[in-house]
Image 1 (cartoon, helix red, strand yellow):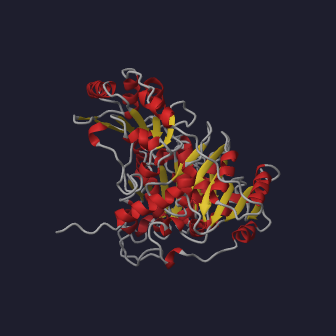
Image 2: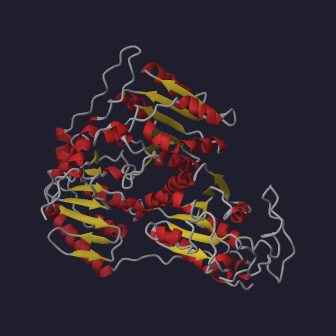
Image 3: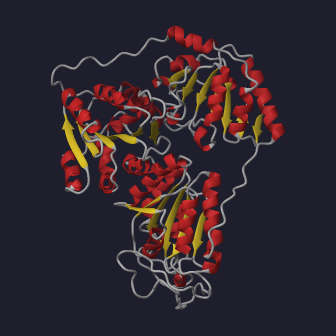
Length: 605
């Protein structure tokens, strides 16, 4: 079928599904009809996209409807293996796709043109920062409107429709504007394959009048993706392994530190192999928590400079050699640039690059290949771990609370610790939950996610929705501050609609506590809500939801017992009332150091 892009009124005559004519029935079922010109009626652009999403592992698409994407949504729904999850707003839909991709390996989100696209873009940026392959789909303008002087609604009032894609260019690794059927197949496949290869989000805009039109290129099942695997340069790999082994094998007390890019490099198993072979103590950077098994016999905790797990920073920073696998050193992970790490002692392994101290850098090396090969060349050395065992003193427990005493945060997390198992996963919101959840000891199989690089408050509500939808085998425990919750609270409604049974601990301390500890001011105080009443109103008697408000340890224990027992099939929302100044000691230290980094005076010009 010929489509004249830019024509004023190029006629579009779909063969079967009434696009541009009578509306699709409210059931959203797309009725089959006889093939036109030998093309089956379901061989549409929308169905092709749906099949591609299913093929790469997507089973749920998080969406917000708008007039430019409605027909596309009909065709996504028509795919039997794909479920559409309607969200309350685009930002939450994007966060949900982010959370889904963390568990499933890939996610998808569908919104409408510009008003939807620019609303979701903050979530897209977060997924980009975390190296998550998420397919962001936008229902775009009618193909006939491109190249004309027409001004459309949902735009900023210009006839140039490129504003949205120009915004997405900075936060996606591929952008496809599909406004012609003949190359739609190629553009969609190019976008999806790039998302998988680069492990970054991509943008696909599909003209609203094309999604339901059959076309010969969609008449067969999509050819399965075969993405050519990346391979290491063998000579570079061998040279890097030889140089690293020589450096580490002559060290007296070397250590290993896991970084967040282990995930994108798909090198977690290789890192564990190296840990087993080396005998070195193993620490994780804060943004890598959950990537390395915390029951490993040589695991010593989180390395986070001055706020590390007790005795961890002392072992790492006193070492004469350390290997960082997939690190991200920013002002947050470095606690205001205060890490006592020296480059002349550090082997830095990135997904495709190895840097040797006082030596060359080696490129074209896959991290998983490097760690696997290094494990066979390293000499076992337990000296640093033996030093750790000598100085280690087990942590204490919070002082016993008096009867009906106001609940303390450290008591809350003591009880959350007892809830964890291989059948649970923890979602930690930006804020003091970062620091309190870091101290949780994750049992084998327990999931853990938080967004440290981007640190967008409110992320966890949508991420909990998406992660729980992808991880039907786990019960999600989300720890969210009241300030963050107010940003994205609406999609608790979607969790209830989806029948999820997550447990949300809403920590109500009256404001943006993490910002208070960086720089206080009246803007950090928020309007208090009756959060349990708010969720009860959202519940509105439909679906399964249970709420509780707790003020003391006795009430907390009762609420947890109910959530884990009689209400185990419900979404459980537990509002925890704590003092506004009840924070972790780590946040106090971290906040003062980040504040010092933020307030550095300008260098003399």
